[in-house]
Image (tube, rainbow, N blue to C red):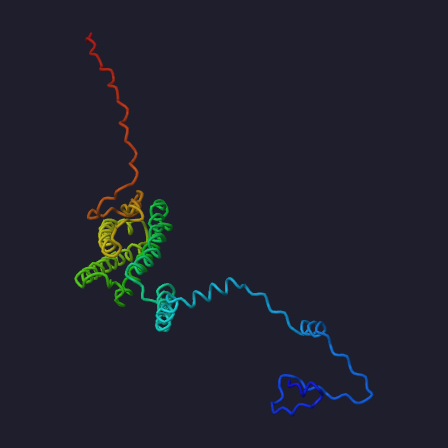
Length: 304
């Protein structure tokens, strides 16, 4: 201020705009007591009370992550994988789908699957029936039933093999066309020889006594040998080995019975053209008759 102002002269009005940040002071009416101004401490306490506490943050971790995100390597990887993220997601989905389909999805059985399924179904029952035939040598009814089971198991085996052959289930994609053709030929031979044995077993099961079974003994054994040979060839073609569950032996048959001798009817005259009767038991032995001692010879007395 100038000296004149200090001596009591009023200063000229200022042309400055009032400060908007400073709140205007309301005029005090004459005679009213002035309201005491709030102290600096009260204002600070009020500000502290109204201020919400900031949450506790891990400043070090945030600073570390911030440094990593600002690094050039992070930005490069983010740009690289960010562009290929859709492709990576599609690859993961495709891989999971293929794995699920291979593990649990439906797929055509392989020749090995077909062979194992059929072999496990019929091999054990057929061997059990064969054992029952051997254990019933003295019981014609039990042996005939065992032969029927043996026939039925063999027929079921061949029927299942023929069904897979018709559907083309013996073709292995891992083998050449020549190998698959050879396997098919061996399989058809196996089925044909098995059906031939079934036909002969039909004759055996139609027998009415032990003689009816015994007359087909040689033929059944020939069929069984052929069946086992075909089995070994086909199993080796498909599974790579021809291991039998057990070593099959000849099928036993009952010994033909010989009818006992019957005494001829005395009222029926024997037929000279009839064949002699063969007896199962030897006839009674004929003992020689007692020897007759010669009588004493008469001596001639001298005549008188």
